[in-house]
Length: 144
Image 1 (cartoon, rainbow, N blue to C red):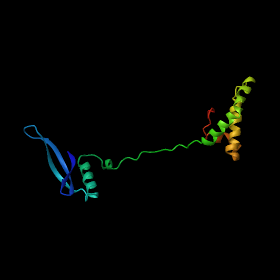
Image 2: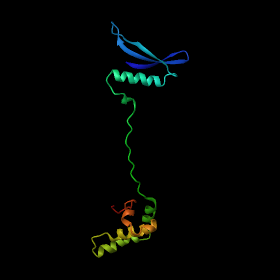
Image 3: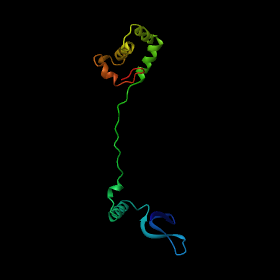
Image 4: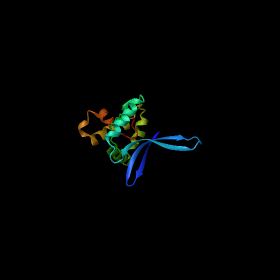
């Protein structure tokens, strides 16, 4: 069975149609019910579909689509930090990495200095909250 839209003059009708084969094996269609004019069918059709679902043992909740649950992640700021990173490298401050490797620190001191400087430039009110600020940005070369 399927639903078919037929025309009669300027009007369109909604029909419930069944496909079958006659005695000679030729495929044919048989109209089981005319559900009404397409421009006039509105809430009545929902009650017909709901009734058909009840008769077939299916739940009428199939008519209402399931709303997907959407969760939004907070975006990390990149623009100002990216511009400062480019400026940091162009001014030669990236060379501090080489200097601090000579004194055999296991910590990336240059990255820590860069984070603190960028924090003061991007969010001057948060000097005591550097670690919290670091979670809200995407800083190239620094793992958060």
